[in-house]
Figure 1 (cartoon, rainbow, N blue to C red):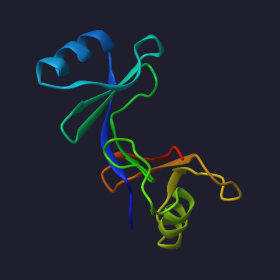
Figure 2: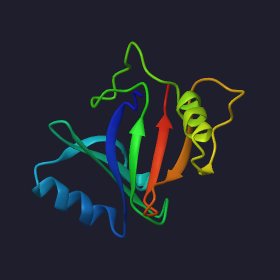
Figure 3: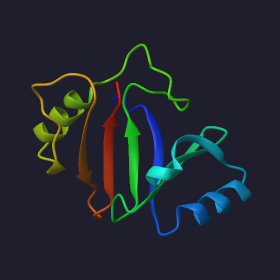
Length: 123
């Protein structure tokens, strides 16, 4: 299964303080919008998303269709196919992508320890 780009999405209390901290660690702004309280920070191939007030807990994030530079992959597993695979293996989803659609969609699943995993396709 091809899950695409990987990042950790952090629920932060103060996005400006978090931005400064991660810049000190060698990260730079790769995407997002500070005014809308989210930034994607990058250090080489490592991606860290900073999100203030957009969700409660940290989560792992996969972006089907993208590489670590947010460039479109030639081949990838569509989010709806990944979702169908998990459901066919009796994995409970927290929310689901509409399987009647195409293009951008997402769903969330919890691992056995309750860690949230966001499968978020942008293309």
